[in-house]
Amino acid sequence: MAKLKPEDLDKIEEKVKKAILLREGAGRARIIVHMGTCGIAAGARTVMQAFMDEMEKSNVSDVLLTISSCAGLCSREPMATIEREGEPPVKYVDLTPDKAKRIFDEHVIGGTIVTEYALAAGSERLL
Image 1 (cartoon, helix red, strand yellow):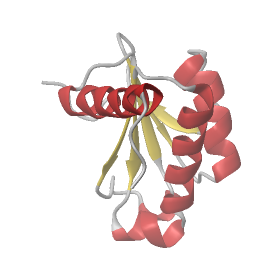
Image 2 (cartoon, helix red, strand yellow):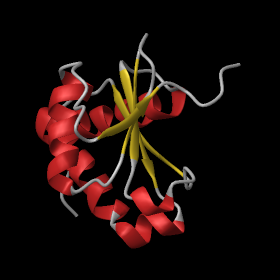
Image 3 (cartoon, one colour):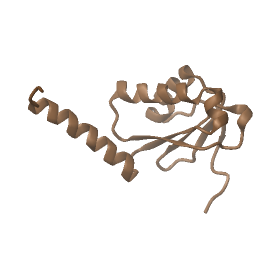
C-alpha cells in the first residue's frame, strides 16, 4: 500500500470539512432536489447529478445540496427548491440537467431567479 503524502491529507481534510458543513447546515444557499418516486421516475437523479457536477466545478463550499420527498406536484417533476439566505425559497419545475446548470450559475451563485423555470417563490406555510 502506498504511503499518504501531506497533499493527500489536505484533500481528505477538505472532504471532511465539506461533510461537516452539510451536516451543520451552514451555507449561503441550499439546493433541495425533490426525490420522491415521481421525481426519480421523471429524471431527478440526472438533475441531482448536474447540481453535484456544478458544485464540484465551481469548488463552492458554502452551498448545501440535499434531497426531500415529493413536493406534491408530480406532473411537474423533476423539481428543485433553491433557498438563499434572507430570500424566499424558489421552486423550479420541469427540470433537465441543462436547466439545473443554469439555475446553479444564475440563481444559486448569482442571486438572480431564472423566472422561466420557476413555479413559485415563497413558502406554502410560514411558522
